[in-house]
Image 1 (tube, rainbow, N blue to C red):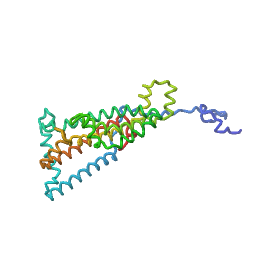
Image 2 (spheres, helix red, strand yellow):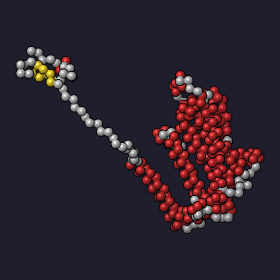
Image 3 (tube, rainbow, N blue to C red):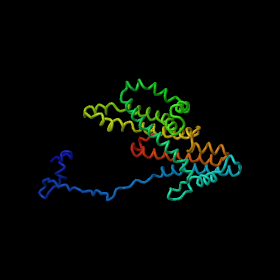
Image 4 (cartoon, helix red, strand yellow):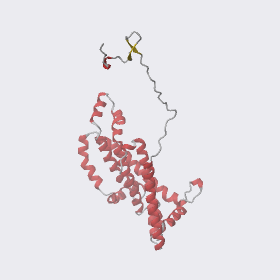
Length: 310
């Protein structure tokens, strides 16, 4: 008697065996159940060793630079190059030794730091809103973008300090002139990057939006802005740096009565080099903190894998 092929056997019949009478029967196949573990809690991601190592390396480089500065300045003993420990002590006494109910801010900090941050926030906010709105409007139409691109490139190439005399004539010395100079400097990176981001929206997504009959507001919310967000934040980070620079520059001009730039000019006129160094360190710390905060917002809204580096 010929043996049937294994391929002809039905999986439900199992393995053929011979009974007592010699006839072939099929032994039923038993199914093995494999237990599947069910997680009882959601795992919380922890930083990898590479991330921790990279962060420690960055802070180690900064600590080494400060240590070298301290050693060289202490050995040289020059009044023009004070050690960082003395600069930090002077900055704390000057700006951050106030009462706890005032968040440890002194009267000098209220008179110097807060007005500067207010002007910078106003100029950066106006530039961000205007740049995003105009950038989306220009970038949605290729024809409008082609017509406006030469004008945008020309306006971006004009140095903002060169327009200070024009702003003085229009606004006179004071806060309006300072905010106007910040806005003119900070608006172009946001506008151009937003227009580029809106222009680079995938054509397939636009066709899908047309098929779904999305309204212009829905296209803007669900299609154009999400596609342009990485470029928008790239422009915002550039504008933030320019806003800080123009904030200081506008406060160096005549007519300023407060601010970090005014503190620099006043300390230079009094040959108070320790205050000059403290103001410079304060500006660097403010720039780093603001850029870190904006980068955290970008990672939150855009995602870490799409975050741009400037």
